[in-house]
Length: 394
Ligand code: MN
Image (cartoon, rainbow, N blue to C red; front, side):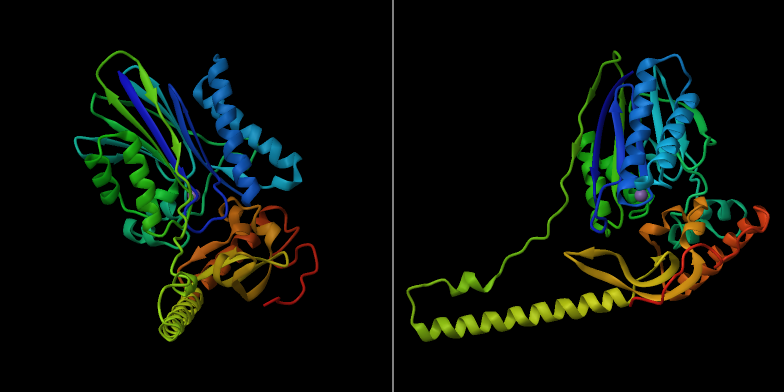
């Protein structure tokens, strides 16, 4: 079987760094979505794919063992390097073996198979919401819109060992396999994904179109797509990969364009300048009002003064301006909460739909932290952690 492979990755429109990594080294392919603060996330996903590639090249161990080793490499670094403490990553791997692919998977990145226009998911998300769906607590539809849909139940590098899902899938000529991070699947639905995959035959173009679609839908996360096209023929593999640059806002229509000297009467020029400046003021003011209204409607749960807190706004800043403020600072210790896999990336902010959802998430965190305290012999309880939190800083 001949494979044509391609990849595209992008920072998206909200995040400050790209914490995704991918591997495109015939016959091994992977995506990894790091978490645990900007640096931690980047380091975790990179260590995972680099360790995997090295072990695969060395040979002699099974894929499951290679993934375990990658887990240990991330965990060891996380426990010895304070600047990346608590980091982790997802990892979804596909190795092409003749007429089949071997899959290994941890986390909420995904593998899909497109065959005869039909898209089939090959992996299972290790998320809180997927567990809730399986236990019949919520529907699949609800899960797709659930504010906590990115909270993981399993991740690489969080503990000394990890449970790894594995599968072998037969492939046919004409099949297209996709590995992707949740930046794609949280932004656009499977129908839209299938439409792009079936309509664009070139894998590189298709990968870029998918990333662009995720950005057009909001680009709330980093997005990475790896595509493998299977064709009849010798086992010759061509690979290309391109990291698409972050989209930049297009800026024009400054007053200078119009104020530039021209062969006209002075009066006319000044009137035109005044009109343009007036318009610029109106546009900027409308933009600020719109931004304020938008930020007021956004909520997330993050960390303030070492405590779990509810924020109004989005977890980012633009040229020094923070786009959020603390609404409520709880007594729950952030370091205790983040020792639970489910809240590992609380430092980055867990986005929720509205204020009610924020309160519900806080309740859940409080209960989980308390349960953990009981499990550990009642040594700690919610709010009784280390450090003296000061008042709000809003
Ligand atoms: Mn992600």
